Amino acid sequence: MLAVISPAKSLDFESTIPELQATENYFPEETSRLVGAISNLSKTKLKQIMPVSDNLIELNRGRYAQFFDQPERAAIFAYNGDVYTGLEAQSLQPEALDFAQNHLRILSGLYGLLRPLDPIRPHRLEMGTRWAPRYKKLTDFWKDKIATQLVGDMAATGQRVIVNLASNEYWASVKPYASKLNARIIEVDFRKDSPDGPKFISFEAKRARGMMARYICENHLTDPTALLGFDSDGYAFDPSTSTNDSLRFIRS
Image (cartoon, rainbow, N blue to C red; front, top):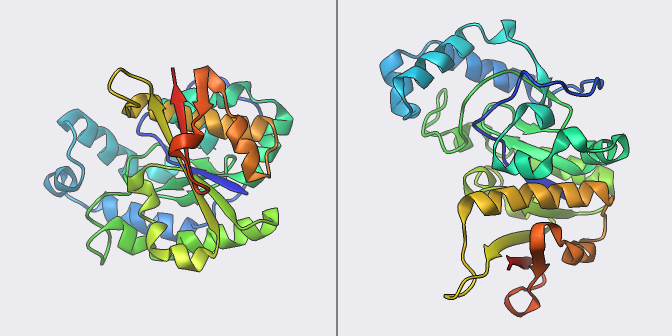
C-alpha cells in the first residue's frame, strides 16, 4: 500500500533535521531539463506561468539560475505547508521514517515523484502550470512516467493499493493513467461538522492529509481497512457517507 501526498509551496531549509542517508531521485534527467528551460525564461514569461508577486518571481529566477549550487534537503523535511504541519516529519521515530520511505510518495511538478528521503533544492513549480518545454502544460511533460514509477513502487510493497491524499492538481499527473496502475485507489475526504452539514475547509483538509500519512507510517499500516481507525485531532470515520474506495472522516 502506498500513500501519495502533494508537495508544498513553503520550504524549510533552515531547521535542524535528523542526519539520514539521502536516496537518489527517480527522474534527474527530467528535472535537469525543466531547470534548464525555466532558467532561460524571461521575467515576463515566468510571471505568465507563475502568477505570483514580483518578489517571488525574482526569488525563483535566482533559484533556477543557480539551481545546482543550492543546498539539498530530504523532501519530507524540506516541504513546510499545511500537509507537512499535519505530518510533523521531524518528530517521526526512525522506524516510522523507514516505513515512510517504502510506503509514502510525494508528487512534484519539478521532480515528478519523490520518496521522503529523496533530496530536493529550493524551487517553485506547481503541477498545474500551463507550460513545459515542448509541451503546453506540465502534466503533458510528465506523461505516464509518474504512474509507471508508482506501479513499480506498489509492486515492492506487495499490494496494488494507493491511498490518494494528494490534491486534485497533483493527482492530475496520475489520474489519466489510472488504468495503467491496475490498482485499488482509495480517495479520502476530510470534513468539519457544522449546522449545515459536513463542511470542506481547505487548510484543515490539507493538514488532515498529513496527519493520515503520519498515522499510516507510525502504525505501519498495510491493510486498507485499518485506515478506518484514523482518529487524529478529533476526526472519525463516517460510514454513512463513505464507500469502499471513498472514505470520509468528519471532525466534530
